[in-house]
Length: 209
Length: 276
Image 1 (cartoon, rainbow over the protein chains, first blue to last red):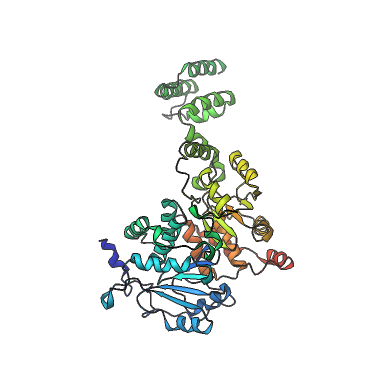
Image 2: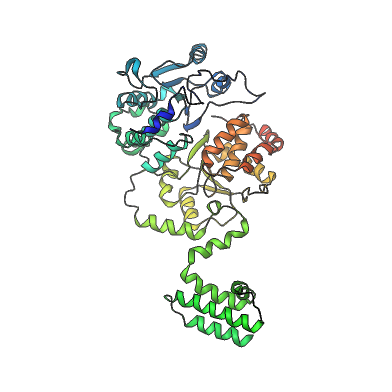
């Protein structure tokens, strides 16, 4: 195991995940829009980020999200739950390690099962506009997006470059990249008629016209 | 003086491509001779300056040095820009890499986006300089309508050929990067670049410079300002793509850019807010 993982303990890390003794920014700088941490568009109407907080809600409204995929064992902040409720955004929990129980470490990687569950939601256009997020929008989100790129047929160097762009100063985790490389893209069932437009021209899925 | 030049010249011409050591020795020898003649006692004479001051000689020595160090010399041409070598588009470098790819384009099944490729908003994309291996991706996956390049150098022919075949329009906005201690990107230039970038008629559009870090980063930062993003998050995004070469000056530029004019244009043409 990578001993550096200790550095990522969420309660030691100053950029903590679930807001334990962190400074709360309650309102945005005047008239400014604040996207969530590590926010970036992935494809048309598909976005990625860290956990959105109240300061980001006006921005999220702009995106007119239909679905948010939350990649974690624990629930997100109450404010996010309330936001989703109030604006009828479907919040989809994808537990990262269903067998882990209470002892589970929040910095554990995703299981193959949870990756497939998340991707199965992503390949259906009816869930769009869609935001994929986890605590920091680094490793778990990066794993899912990396596997999506594999499905799209991206070469691995580009997938890795994209993943590392979001991992911050401590860099990428080899285990995450191994997971992405080894991911069996055949596990995700894509129904061409239901897939988002940008996915329809992928590899063997080319529609005949 | 003239006689000496001819002898240097003829001796240089006698050299074969494998005689690099001889060139160095010859130059050293010339050093000493000229030094003795001019009565200098500084130890080492600046042979480079001596050669430079004589136009005919400079050309011939240059031609020979090119045989040994083609890459180093082509980079030294770009010194006048005072930029990171990374940022500068280098025709030689581009062609060399392209030739290599052409040879092993065997595994064409992979989808290969350019380095630093990403969506920005809607159908606006960013990346580093696209190479031949990226062309299928740009044509088939992104279905580009336009490309905007942010450097003043001539665009390579193979990219132009690809673009005319794929029906992609080229916009060139020649800006030089922001290098300490000066901010070099004029605001007007950026305004015209933004006018191209956010015009829906040009979408899908790819914006690129050489590495897709600094110039492209500045432009994207200004697009974010049109979206009213907070500066903190704009800088965060800038640094993510510029890593590990983020520049404080680029961030200053993004903050100082006067957006009034482009906002007025965009308002008239109904381009705002930019659609996600």
